[in-house]
Length: 125
Image 1 (cartoon, helix red, strand yellow):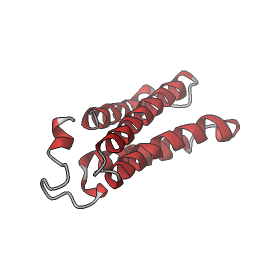
Image 2 (image 1 turned 90 degrees about the vertical axis):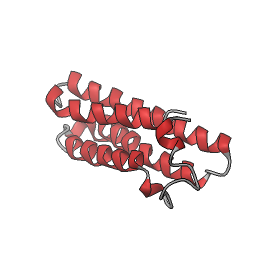
Image 3 (image 1 turned 90 degrees about the horizontal axis):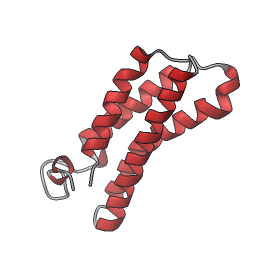
């Protein structure tokens, strides 16, 4: 388990709820940022790229929260963190797709890409 999450395991520090995890807080920031940026996507992307990127970005924090609920079962806890990391990678891919399609500029997606990589590093197991 990574050093950042290891120091936040049950019984360590002041972690009493999944929302106390810094990685969860960063995931929420990413979700909010993706939501705002995706508002500018064309209407014909509503049921494809817009929906997909919003779902994957929201799933990052949701999987961290679910991991917390399964914290007493190491395999389940780790599996949900791996799922969260997968959703972070999917979100980053979708951001790059958005740039390729001309919907977003690199300067718009770069800060979210950095934050997604931070989330990924924090949830490594």
